[in-house]
Amino acid sequence: MSNKITQEQVKTLLETLQKRFEKNMHRHKNIDWKDVRAKLEGNPSKIDVLFKMEETGGEPDVVVFDEESKEIIFCDCAAETPKGRRSYCYDRLALDARKEHKPANSAIDAAHEIGIKLLNEEEYRALQSLEAFDKKTSSWIETPKKIRDLDGALFGDFRYDTVFFYHNGASSYYAARGFRGLLKI
Image 1: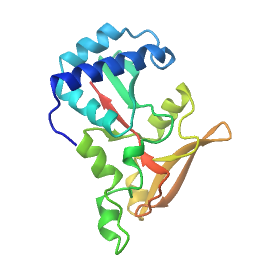
Image 2 (image 1 turned 180 degrees about the horizontal axis):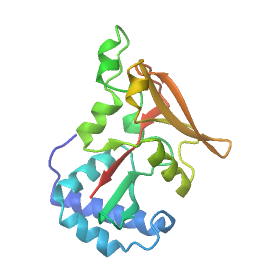
Image 3 (image 1 turned 30 degrees about the horizontal axis):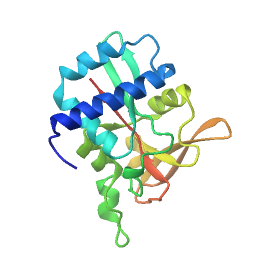
């Protein structure tokens, strides 16, 4: 992935984000695109991160405006876990522990490279309250240290009109499992 995007790419990205924002107003009631754009223009490094989110299939959109911190929160809103972030194990420790058939990366490392953080259980539930995501795929979520210390990791999906959380070995990876992230601006 590129580190610096061109002005043309910035223009195209902002147009894409605005169209998605306007098409999905149920995700961000009472938030005005002009305010979002102003926040973005004041934080060019965040535009680079949103570009990477978009480039890897995340389809980022605004999901929250935090009145207290005045932060706008973007989250991956692709219907299924982003295609450019699938088939990863959970973290570097799990990746290094694999003796053979190693995946290309880990979810935690890839999120760090993009500049986002994985959703935790509460954030994943909040996202799912906006609309149903991951109806055919699943997404790694932040895993509590106690579980990770036992070589486990958590993931979530949406089936039977319900959000489910499961566990797996952190070194496992599947073609239908990726990760979603969020970005605070």
